[in-house]
Length: 546
Image (cartoon, rainbow, N blue to C red; front, side, top):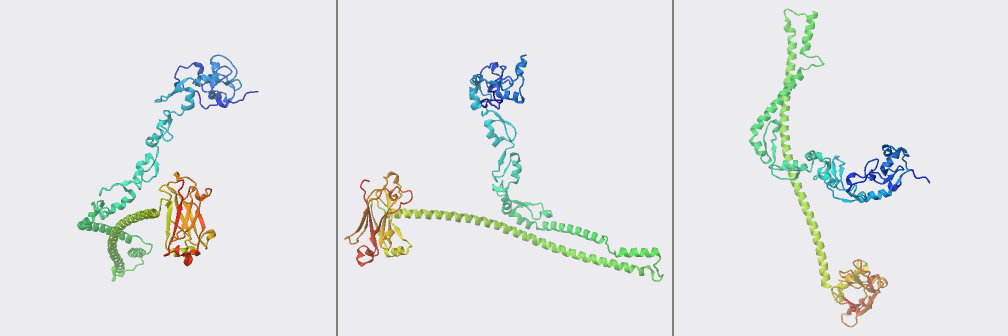
């Protein structure tokens, strides 16, 4: 049968030979690959007798059968290299894999065989040099995590203030715009103020230095906020001088603009210029007659003078309106500035009030949680106190039920069909139990009998007790004249889930649904059991065997 045209999977390798630097002893030439000149890895012997790494041999014949270069160097002509004339050299492989080896990575002290090196150390050495994916630097494998966290200039970081992800080289630029970056107030010395709240702090901090409100008109003073009002009062004269100079400058600019608008050419006839132009045309055309007695001035100059006075009047009106508007603007500016100061003060006060409200709200919520926890603790303590006050630890329990008539009516109405007794025990570390009474009956005794049941409850010491519960239980309705008690007793059915070790707070109740006929409590003869609207029920647990 012809051999396969591909290498066996056991010899298939994606790596050339082992580096000569891993040898712990001298190497014979027969263990070198004739192609890569390295130590043979998965050696393959050609028909000519030369050995190659499986990886190298596969590369040689990848484009078809080839001549052996080693044979050519020796001056020998052999058959072509192909998979049909070559075979895996397992003997050489075993010899090579048993050779002693050391790790060539600086700092590594690993030693073993070439087999162990290939199986568990090659490519896994902590001291081998690898390329960082981000910055392309060569680093040791064991230092990769530290390099990525602390040293790599291209690493990504999370801002510890706003949790935004950014590149390490952008850390300074991010700190300049981070809204959560902690700022330091040089006035009051407060630290760790988020940048998004620093502007509000600067406005409300009395020690923070701010420029004068008249900075826009030339006041160069920078003063603490708490002294800003005092500066404005003391510098009122200087501020007015600066403000007046600014207004005069504005007025001069407005006048220049007004004059330029008046002198600008119009699309309609232009008054005086139009008259002069018509006069020139008349003179040139000879159509203007001048009476020597009347003269030139008597005909032309009155018209020109009239036009001039009209423009002068219009200019004066506009100048007066401009002055009026300037006064109105000054008054409005003062009002706006005053309102701005008032609004800023209100904003500061609102911020302080809101902070106080938030603080008090947080305090109220904290107090509410504390009160709720204390209420729960008090209720738990009251329950434990009541349980401790009424409980017994000898298997004998007497249950006093007051206000029997009202509770019976609630049971009949279905509002409270059953009531539970306090807890009692067979001993201090014994079974935990209680009684359950249906005042209008339950099951077969509904409406005709008192139904009394015994309940096994989950206790702290259940792991130390014997299960299932198998103690005899006696239930009694006491005759308060001590003559004839109503008694019922039973021994637990150990196959019932009612007497197995409880998995929840209490097991299913078990007992006497026909414990006592209700007519014995309704007729006059029942006065021995029901006196002063009170009955007594007694439970006795047999402690034999405990």
